[in-house]
Length: 258
Length: 333
Image (cartoon, rainbow over the protein chains, first blue to last red):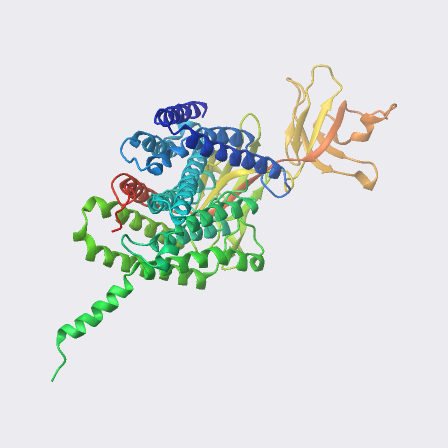
């Protein structure tokens, strides 16, 4: 597990270096700091609930190792924001790759033979990290989309808000197979059908529906102008979904007590 | 004079255009999303479960939501076929695969609803169970295992592990054993028991006993278990453990061995300045709850649907992010 943390840390480091070289260190830092803050809150919630009567006593090392990997991978998440922030699509392909491929590598680690990562539970921990990273990426992109949307609505030149909102939803859907894999490796069934699962699927479906309603190119008028704020609504839906899940004491979409 | 056929076709065409508008598709998906978001709050309090581990059953709402998604998927496919010639396959192939993956994921999730809901079962070390309390469509029901399940040992250090044995009554010699790490499973007929953690509130009592002899060590054992305090000593068998002997004496354990027979060992005796003389040299250090293994009992499900859903969504995500409409701006297929 430590090895995986180092690998993901290196990937994150190279991603951040690439971003800084591209002159986007401020955006990278802002999003990364924001997400690390959320992770700190998550750690606090986790240990706050530990030992509560009726909650099975989970393996203590799981939280440390899983969260270590999550911190390393969450640093990759901002890279998913970068490609479209300034309209440049091709020169930041490497940082997109770093963010997305780190998630895919973690998926591969999750389905690798058990001897590699020492047991089903720790495989599950790697996948929890991947799930968190995908979610972090989705919310980061959604936040950038919301910002671009407001800037457009206030009269600035039209940015990449719709594109970013679409990316956010795509990354949001990536969390679902990861959630199924997490459940499979930790509790032995792909889904429980818990309220956490209902709520997570509903949240991503809501965001998807909003993105579908985004105005098409060339459409004009008052209603279409209002619809240009849809990326803001997408961000609000996703962020509220994560926030409400945390307030219920669980992680977004996972049928596991924290 | 019959009406021209093209008028009728045009009417159907207009209906089709209206049905495949983004507003219609988005409205259907938003309706499904709203249902799935709201139902946990309206139904959970009635069901009395918790947010993470209790299965939520609301079949009517689920059917409605999935119908909306299915209709939206069919209409989206129709829209895609109408407009495929307007853009290159690279633009729509990724989103289409992602859409198929999402529909497959939802179908798989729905297929796991109904029947026996996943439940947690706590089994203490040395305990044998032959059934579990299941919930089927909200009703409690005792479901028999096809084989008896015995937890023969539980280990908390250095890494958590439960040793499980399953056997049919009368065929103990043909039992199956499994050493389960945390997160590992064992199949019992159509059911899958996954070792998910420990509980110290539901476990049975265990006594921690030591000896006044210099070459001894402390040991613990539950009722029915045995322990040895010295390397060459015969084992003691624990016959009974009570938290408060006769309601006033405090914790006590009854142990037996061939040379001393059956005798009580009291914790309070070790705390007295002038303890009474016993025929043994044992000291009861404490009586505590032994950790019990917590299993999640679920129906055995094949793993291939997870792989199919995962591959479709990952291909869809990669195709969309790198090749599809989410790669660059200004393409609204």
